[in-house]
Image (cartoon, rainbow, N blue to C red; front, side, top):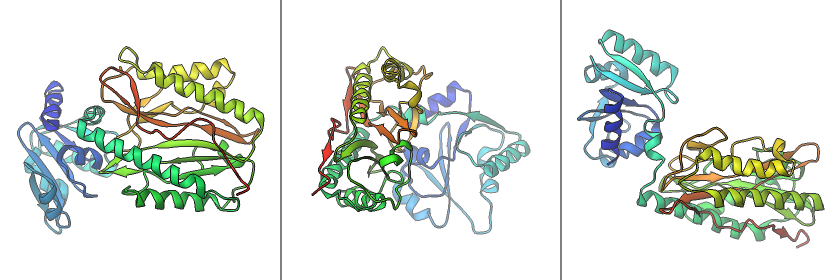
Length: 360
């Protein structure tokens, strides 16, 4: 049980409780999806503090949680005082607002308590997915694949990047997505050299690259996929670069195993690109965790010494970017580490080189 696992971690740290301010962690622990609220986890109690807008929603979405409604005109911190007085309580250092932190800090000093920094305490639990979570992630990935299948025949000369991004968002919702995982990226031509380009009013032109990076949400769980395609004929050196990057991405996927760290998987792709003189053009981590957030713990980063474990889910997305040559390429898949320690692709849309007829 999630709460039991968290309480075990609190006991290891000799903490009496944890103030959960991150809304995704709050949802993970108690099921409440409201945009505002604070969860206090102690040794034998769960208390959710909400204002009157969320009382009914919280009672419907949670079980075994005491709902404490903050009266109109009252302040959250004062309402919390009797619940945490004299306790040694952890807080989520990476997500708490400065205002909430300072108010909590002042309260704990007044109430003879201690406020202790924690990092990734809940995120490390979220890192390992349950079978139910994996089913939701599979469905989110399937929606992304189906969206790309429907979008490819729609691409035309003269439509703008924004037109295409809007179609991706619309079609994915029609297929069951709760919304875009993030602001959908569509970049074309020289704008593909921008790793996180915003879709613009630039019109798609014949014989250039198009990069599509988007994601979907199903039952709160995310997918994230990137494909770079040829819209007509492109220069041979672009095709050659694509094949090098594809080989590096596939190699990293294939090397996933229990005896590897996430940092070692990052290095597989990085070293493959280094051999081809392309490492300097790979300017970001190889990937990130994916689940109830699109970008979550842990990072697939060069120095991450965290060992790969069963039921981890993360992206593998090498990219190379050439501002002077006016193009960039990224290939991204979501993967699940199965019980054998191997990577199972959740996103299955083809990543082999695709050329779309620009004269249709």
